[in-house]
Length: 234
Image (cartoon, rainbow, N blue to C red):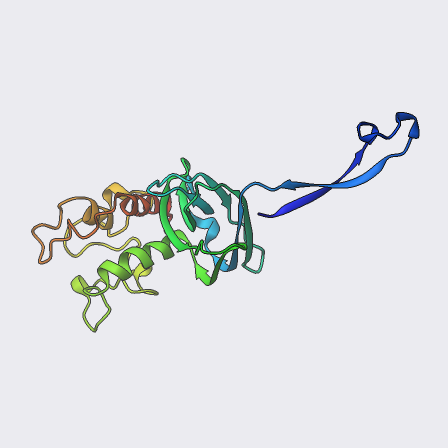
């Protein structure tokens, strides 16, 4: 446990020194600083481009609980460097994460989880990362679920490339080849965007590939919805 020291002036009259002695004695009183400390370091982009209601944070969670006990917003310097310290982590915290939470401090998704098997500062050294909202959709949805059919090989289903560096331009404001009159991403309007309907409804059940059960996470669907609703065509 870390300790901080303050200098106190103690009257020693109770220890047999006369009150008229007039002398004051300096001593150091050890006061425990409650909780543990976690430090996030790295070079990050995209921290500030999440939709309203989302926060990029260092957070502490109790076991089997998605609501953070303690959080600290991640701040980035002008050159992208990050050094964020979360202090006062209580004993009931069993997981410390670099993650995204909503306004209720509920875990939405995790970038990194710390190793708590240490008696020193808990360290989250994340290197260079793009943690922007769209970059996260690319990493946690397209790269894990979609690119095997949409561009990872020489073939892209429906002519749609969802690989890194191509997906945004392929989606934004582009007409669907499957549903006449619908855009793949209609900026600001998730409900009328085929991308969102594909992961949230059964619209694809008559296509060559049924997509309706490919994305089971309601939180990830919510991130896609909120990104589209906040997005403006460039």
